[in-house]
Image 1 (cartoon, rainbow, N blue to C red):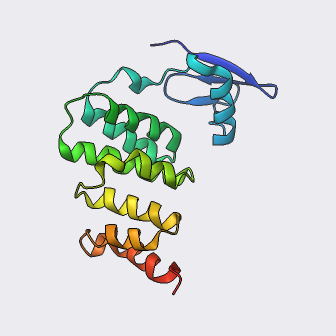
Image 2 (image 1 turned 135 degrees about the vertical axis):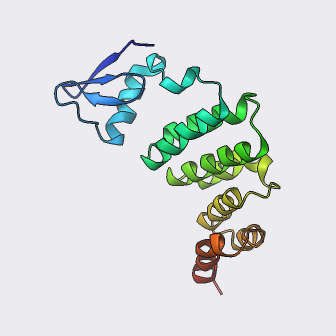
Length: 171
């Protein structure tokens, strides 16, 4: 998978090397708005390094790294891949993928999508998944539902969402 893709956008040449986009002359990573445009131009030619990986643990590690780098669109793609294909993920790994998917969709200002994509996991007991779903419900100002979800989570890790409900919910 050593093929590189070169795309010119607004007179500047960019290269994608299966891991990241960078400016051809300076080797600097462009802003996410430019990356979005580059991916539109390149279309289906863009193939990420993780697309050939079929190990759940390894994909989750990559998703975590991408989430830390705030590459939420890529996290969405990775976690959807994990959840849609049978990689023999255990329940914990599945819940981790679903929580990362939910959190990344929220970060992309898509709380409704976050809830829809993780609907089939809503009865799971993962604190992080429940927190992400409760936060998405808060984003949509569905306070009663958010409170019901967050009350299923143990104390300390749920504090910020519980506090948000108390603070933002209309009296």
